[in-house]
Image 1 (cartoon, helix red, strand yellow):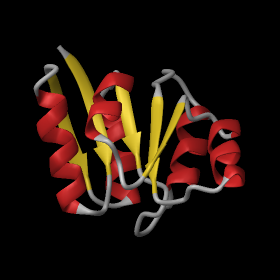
Image 2 (tube, one colour):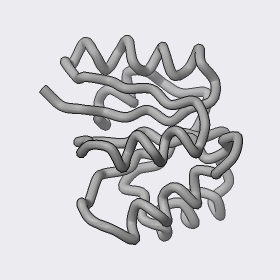
Image 3 (cartoon, helix red, strand yellow):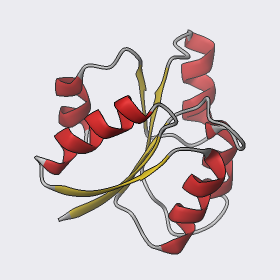
Image 4 (cartoon, helix red, strand yellow):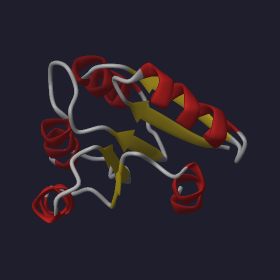
Length: 113
């Protein structure tokens, strides 16, 4: 079973993502701000991190930067309301493996996971 960390400050979205990923099946942990998300990512290995960009405390871009600066390599899927081409390119250049914009399609999210 895959272990997935969802770092998302909107609790409704985080819970919706968790519910659908558990159907895959995945073990899903939630973090609702940047600091707790970074701490959770450091505690144990995950198979995937679903990461919002606009988070309280440490933003998603900084979390991505920090995760990419040290092993192990964990795939990162950015999930954000920032939908301009520049935002997508920046997220991918900083090390994200995938980039989805809100409002999200649950079917597309599950397919990409």
